[in-house]
Image 1 (cartoon, helix red, strand yellow):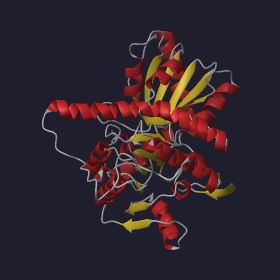
Image 2 (image 1 turned 120 degrees about the horizontal axis):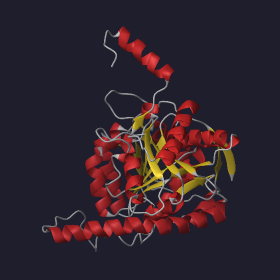
Image 3 (image 1 turned 135 degrees about the horizontal axis):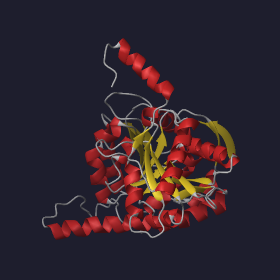
Length: 408
């Protein structure tokens, strides 16, 4: 085992290297390009055995990845933002083929207007396609999650592709100390892939993606995918325990931070959860019983686990780093739905923060907590709030003034 300072992108590449991946079709896009540049170097100098191919677009990249995985190869690819959307059609096809490839998405806000910083509308747009989704907070978690994802995807009870998500810039280019697992121990954890579902044999041809005419046949296959996705929750628990025993780091389907006696719960995901944990520490210093629930496995959503954690709390604030235009926060709607029939449920408030990488200040966290406490005392629950500080609003008004536009 070695310990190095790695960016989130380099940590992802190390996970692929240790997983002994056979084939990487790739297409560059900021801010994930460092992943494929690193892998390209390792394939070129012989460090990794296999094939690296630069494709002409994300659409053809994912098509090649799915096709290769259907022949029994262990496959990786990566993208970001508009690239994920350009491959969108193929996401559904690949998931329906039940091939266990792993794909990293480095979150970047969607155009327009164009920006390079992160929010989660890109990855959450793919939440219904059949890929499992794991959202990460640290560089160490990125590396470990790539390795764990192959074991999860290749499990006979699952056989679905996995998307591992990390935040662009805030994690992709941030260096953190990362323990690089010993390669032999990783081989013990993740042996060579030996498919018995999708493989290539000239004497045993197999068709993928057939037409099924008749809704009852289509429904059968979709329901099988749904059941396999739900299986991933228990399989993830098994894998996490095995990973902990070998490497000493344990990952649940969610992360519970100072929740034991918490009356109020912040719900966040990805790297900005680190800001939320810092806010929890500040609140604890002044005697507020606040904790944080970080969503890690987002598809399948661990519904029962979240219900058990939230029941009997006084209040919950869902902080979405995304926006469903015309509705509000995506995670808020899912948390509210899974709690709607529960007895002793908390009040649930919706906040949208961090769009396009916008910072979340301590003042904003204080506003979130104050509103949640007030709602628990009065029963008056405000609608979705998009938070903006006075300083940010002053800067925005200045830009509107420069552009000669009215302030609205």
